[in-house]
Length: 263
Picture: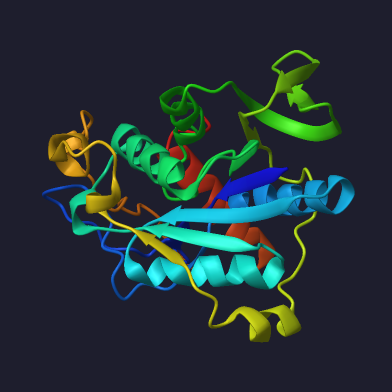
């Protein structure tokens, strides 16, 4: 059984500059980490491998420095990795990202199960996983909270629905997006880190894509655009009062009346 996990490098802080013209995050020079939701997907893949056998590969789309999350995945137990990187892919929205990922996955190989985190912390759309499945023409199931069983080229999972939990059996190949806390992610192994720090990573660029239409990638292939993005303004005002409890309570009462919270 071949399992693939889609992982992403995201900013490690919320203090990230934004290009006001394009609405794209300026990632250069920013501390980064693996998308937290992808850690749960990776742990799920490793648990399936340990119980049922097979291999776990990881793939990421991003700038060259995104190799760091692939090596982190190796230290956790992933077997192989690939990076999709090219300036032509920059500024992609969810549709262009999904198209690029699906093209990279086709180049990387054939997989029985593709696992994704439910969403990313820098986008929060939860759309890329299902869109990748659509472009690969395979079934997808989202909001997975439990892997029940893998048997006879099928997997049985519990899907968290708004009103109840639905148990679903789906045939391979398929794509699953898993919820946070499906499993507790393991820590990277120092020994595996030392063993895999020079491990080869497959690199895919635009020239490797089956679809060579440049207008389908990056900003030009993104039908949605951010019209305006800006940091929120803070209206927090602090006042420091001194005095007796009676004096301070009187000041609070006066302020509440002034703001018309009380009559």
